[in-house]
Image 1: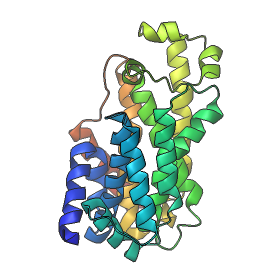
Image 2: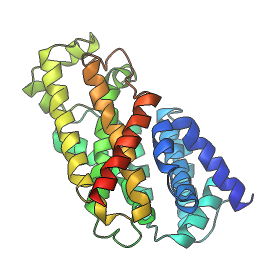
Image 3: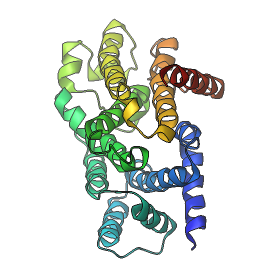
Length: 282
């Protein structure tokens, strides 16, 4: 398969599975956008192996292909062909790719988190890693300086996912909210099983939401360090994702019975707001 067709294959994946990310990163120059699509394709394969199929062998096969890939042998599959081209153009490091697989293994062998530190470690492995993967594409000169920024932005987005999907995750046998925090806010697993939304739940939810928002804000304070052609897409992706938290609030914190999404109209409004913001900064 040609490189061009491999990139198109990856673009179809992100277009189907993440309209928010696609809307934001399609704003990049074509070469950078294609690189993001390729990385996303790999991440989606990892995620689906456990979240969709609960298939550890599928994940282990992917890990074996990853080991081959970074040893210099490119498997004859579109995502690897595209990623091979990406590694020729950008200083992509292998560690976050393997760390993401470790994060998916954590999901497969899921255990309730006891502490906030346990949750944040998990957020690094399943999302901070993604920030590190795409950082050399978005900040070609300053990617070492922005390492923690990329990790924190990934963590913020993962916390947002968790806060959006509490009910769905519970139905799938996973509770990501730390036990010590549930105890602190006097919200029990029994309450969660009954999908109770009360003041205790709201306070618990807001604790995590405020942490996510701080991570967003701290990360975006350094937006000036990203490449000029990447500032707009990065800000747009972050603000669209951050808006999910406001959608949950607007729906009276009901993330137990419904999935809260940002409308296409609101995404467009956010993109315009970001454009105005950048014009003010530049």
